[in-house]
Amino acid sequence: MALKQFRLPDVGEGLTEADILGWTVAVGDEVKVNQILVEIETAKAAVELPSPFAGMVRELHVEVGQTVDVGTPIITIETADAELGPASSKPSAPVDDMVPSPKTEQKREPVLVGYGVSQSATTRRARKPAGSSAASVSTSAPVSASAPTAPAPVAAVLVEAVAPAAPRTEATKVLAKPLVRKLAKDLGVNLTLITPARADGVITREEVEQFAAAPAVSAFAPAPAPASASAGFGTAAPADLRIPIKGVRKMTAAAMVSSAFTAPHVTEFLTLDVTRTMKLVQRLRALPEYADVKVSPLLLVAKALLTAIAKHPEVNSTWNEATQEIVQFGSVNLGIAAATPRGLIVPNIKGAQQFSLRGLAGALGELTATAREGKTALADLTGGTITITNVGVFGVDTGTPILNPGEAAILAFGAVRRQPWVVTDKHGAEKIKIRSITTLGLSFDHRIIDGELGSKFLRDIGRVLEEPVASLV
Image 1 (cartoon, rainbow, N blue to C red):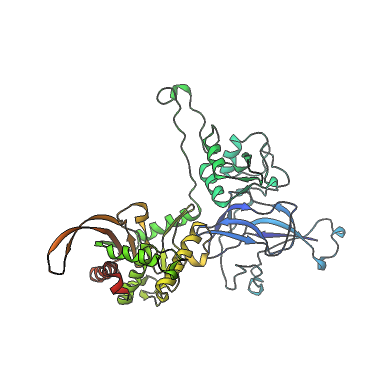
Image 2: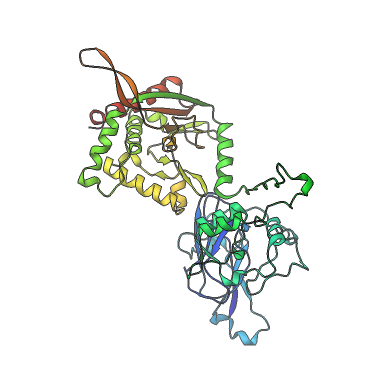
């Protein structure tokens, strides 16, 4: 028998850390190769990690909610290893791990579904000293808080300060969906303190919210203020809520700051009549071939953008500072900004210019549904070349969107409203009619796109939306 450690891998794009969202196994469980062990959240998306070994879980080294550096051991599995001989003949089992040494890294082959050992030379940041990280946490018994052997994480100390004397341990396997775990983390709720009402033991969103509303529950709530410091009519001031900046939100913030202070942004606006576009949406919804896909105004905005790029391919470009080149992409990887419980992400449709209107509708529906479920693959979050952000779904008229790093343009699609509008009939007479009106906002990198190109590009998007049938046919 042998004890093998599985270390947190880099699941893509050179990420250096991840948050533990939830374990699917407990100490004593038998696991198979490629069985899902844990769900983690990186700076880009939630990812499920499969097991590289078959055997019995002996130790879980990290707790739910903990942030872990790439290369840190997260689980130990006892495996049957015939080459090592009987385990009884050894005083202790040898420990192996999943991360190869620099000398053998080039010879190792990927063994997991979805990720494996890198075949190119890579570097990772230096491992922290042993005293600066939390001690390994065995789920077979709770760790005593009276005599710690190493400094505990700040979050752990705060949770212990408000925890009851005998909370459930991870060995009892807290069951909750990823979105519920995310909510609990944002509210500072320790899931092990909640007793689920459901027969299957799964903690619900409502139970987390109720627990958070109860007195002295938040892990980040300050000590009660003295009576003399109470605000208004003898009631205590509400406690501040502290939300850790990590995961997708941390990555998004860094990218937006970098973009705002690197690329010179220019934003132009166009208010137009999209009455015919809205009528075409209704007609498409009634067609049998569109019965199994979602048809929305966003679909025609996306098609209008792709049509305009065909006329102005320079817009689908990036500024390469290192090589001092403007790189014009041969393919349009259309990003759609999506608001998810974990923050804003921008998955993209690869080769969107090749899709028919029906194919584009299917791709958009699949992309948004996957994003809302938190299952977007890392490959779908990288390589975008231009983006649409649909602020209209929130009732917003338009905005000045910030470019995604590496892209030259982003289009904001505002709310469609019924408004009075001056129209000219075929005889040249002007009349006021009630029409469907929207406003587009186009931000672009002024190093690549000058005012003339940006204006023509936005104008051509507007022309397609004003006369969609004539433009698309």
